[in-house]
Image (cartoon, rainbow over all chains, first blue to last red; front, side):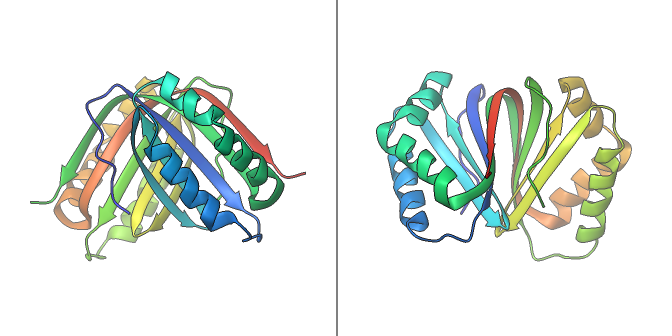
Length: 107
Length: 107
């Protein structure tokens, strides 16, 4: 996993902070399918994902419309429902306007 | 590490996505000192941090002024400089206005 290469701000970030249950059934396949679904959507800019107990996945989008479109897709709604029923003990989703960014890469 | 309990939106998030070098000297102590420094600042709301190769730390703040205040503190500026010189091979910092959030906790 690497740092997402995003265009100049402004753009949107969706921070999905989550804790898993112990249920593994279907989780990895669905998580992968959701990444592939996101990548196909208009306005998708990239994502970053890490888990070590707490999981944080941040996806980046061109606009709020793109965020809403992805949230409302049928397959994604099904995955969200299964997430609440089976895979997550808690989560928080934060929809954010990235106003400014800056970075560093070692020479 | 748990999911940060933040107040109703709007508020600010700072997403710090980073890749480490192999230099350990001083890193853990400084990271801990920066958490303690953040917690003492006006407008600090909480943070979440995970590393598994890629590191993602998200800190939450009441206002852009609180974000800027923390960024400009002398000890934090020193830590940022050491981060570029020693501890990080790359990072990206994104300053975000959290416009909306929602969450879930299993029954």
